[in-house]
Picture (cartoon, chains in turn blue, yellow):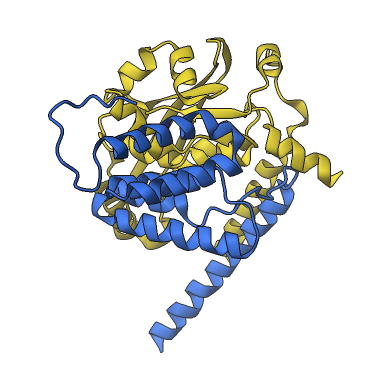
Length: 144
Length: 216
């Protein structure tokens, strides 16, 4: 019974804090807290990836799921998310998938064009220089 | 009863402080002529210079930067991709990136402005009964022509105060905070205030302006 009481008390104080938080939010509520975008947990997943690099797969899955949901709902994908996913593909050796994501970023966000164009161009010329057999080049220079 | 009264007074205190913070109607005068004239649409965040002893701090802070900048209405270049691109160009040391002419970096990315962030402090001070976690960041926005547009600093402290648990409770919570201080809530709050909601935040970017004008 004692355990139960303690639990109820905890709940009560939690509720009190929640109420205080809500009141505070109302009082400071001059600034709009409406967001422009949905991020699908990108920032938290990026943090986790930096903390434990082996969780990079989770970042990738999160971005894929989130982008799919946004596309389904016909909502604009937040700045940078396509490109971040593309870079994860690139690091996993999936060049074609990377280029596809960079193209999407480029289409959606004109501000990204210079960077996306130069990355796509580099990847495409690299792919041409080393076709499917992927022979190793001793000379790192890639001529376009 | 006593506990109740003290809780009420805490609430009142919270309420008053909220009122004091209030709306952003009386922001201190700041010279933003260059910023307004440059009218940047896009911001590239370069890797962060770290003056603290925690080697992981820069990446953690970096992960909490894109959201407030984008929500303020700017196109923010993907931070992890930016890092990758810079490393491919041979920039592994944030200090070296910060030493480059901002024009060069902006040109490389096609960005209108470059944001430089420095961590001045990121630590937890142990004072027997409580642990104080401190973060202190410095932000500088430079245009693609090399002109400084805006700067800000943000210092935040947090002391988990478990006064309900008595002496043992305080010792335990201080020890936990000491062993694994959680910097992220504080870091997210600091970046959000410095860039998005504080009195010296960034100016509203194009995408936010667009949205606000649609709401009118």
